[in-house]
Amino acid sequence: MATYTSDFLQAGELYSRNQLAEIFEITDATLLTGIFRPKGHDSVWIFITETKTSDRTQYKDRLAGDDLYMDGQTSGRKDNVLIDHESGGLELLLFFRKSKAEHPEYAFRYEGPFAYVSHEGQGPASFHLQRVSAKKRSVGVPETGEAAAGLLHGDKKYQQRAREALPILVRQAKAHRTILYGELAGELGMSNPRTLNWPLGSIGNSMLDLQSRWGRQVPPIQALVVNKSSGLPGEGIAWFAPDAHGFKNASRAERKLIVESMLQEVFTFREWDLVLEELGLSPASVVELPPIGAITPRGGRAEGEEHLELKLALAQHPGWLSLPRRFAPGETEVGLYSGDTVDVLFADPNRRVAAEVKGRSAPRSEVVRGLFQCVKYEAVLNAEARASGARLDCEAVLVLGGNLPESLRWLRNTLQVAVFEAVGT
Image 1 (cartoon, rainbow, N blue to C red):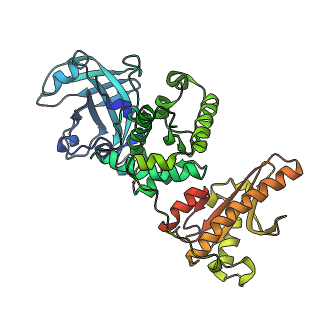
Image 2 (image 1 turned 135 degrees about the horizontal axis):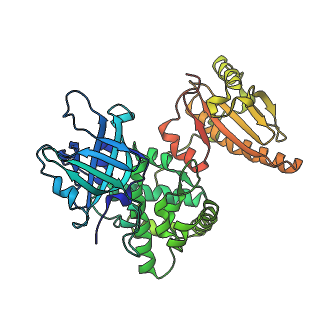
Image 3 (image 1 turned 120 degrees about the vertical axis):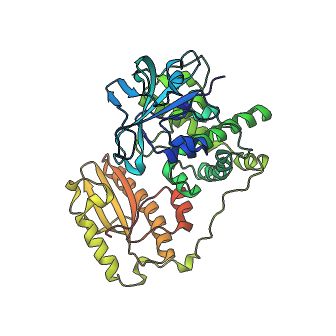
């Protein structure tokens, strides 16, 4: 069966060579060349920098819409790879940038698959390639890295990460909480959330394997990992949906309904501890919280100057919380029907955002209190909206003058509290 790297890439996304090396576990130095074939895949990668630095061979390369005009290598060694790629069962994938410094980390924009049209001359030959639409290569062949990944027991880096990620997902499932790609990557010490597709696919395939061996359903727990903007898992979850082809063709609204159903199965499944035991994994480690007595009540001490300054500054800068300017100024020291007082409240006719503020020097116990306060504030704001008959989106966020301690990231993710770090600096 052909293995195409396009199954694991998203057209329009940026990829640096280092990121590609991490995703596909490439150690071959020839990745730095302009035409590269990843080992074990039926793909050829073409890296094009339109305006080249003076120390590089000044090949004439130009992307005009769906047409790529490029010079081949001076030696011509890889010309036949481009010319005969279709008969050889190879796909040509274009990574393009206008200049070396166009994107962060010297990344390229992945343009997708291209096909050979014609060429003329030699040393170097001038090629014309044309963009092709993505299409399934055969019925039932998986289209994503998730579906192609192996089970989580193995020595590959993605399998090691799958074994680290699954206990975290079990923790989230038992708390009935999803987790963002970036949050999971942070807990795993990964700099690039895009490389999670293989570990998550490995987890999904391992759940299917358990389901087959046990003779009863094991839900796709990797559906808990969602995109911040859409609130949905990545495209690879389609392979694990009840109707894979139906999911691929569904609208976003229909996908949300399908995913909600999948998540309910994950949340109500009672055997996640048994899953970890069967796979020889331990539950996610949890850093012990400070004793209740160490959490200072709001009225327990006077407001510090650092806290006051950050609170007043935040009220004038809703943009620090990615809120539009119309939310300024926020109101400070707003009372709630629960008897609590919110540091800063931003509101418009459709939305209320409560901010619990902690200064740069706030101790760990205060940050813990802030996380739990946000859970309470959001519940109270929603209750107040329901009691008044208003239809409002209510949220409570934690605002830190410093950074969230690494030992509390698991708690942030479990409680699903939005945290804004190093605000005002």
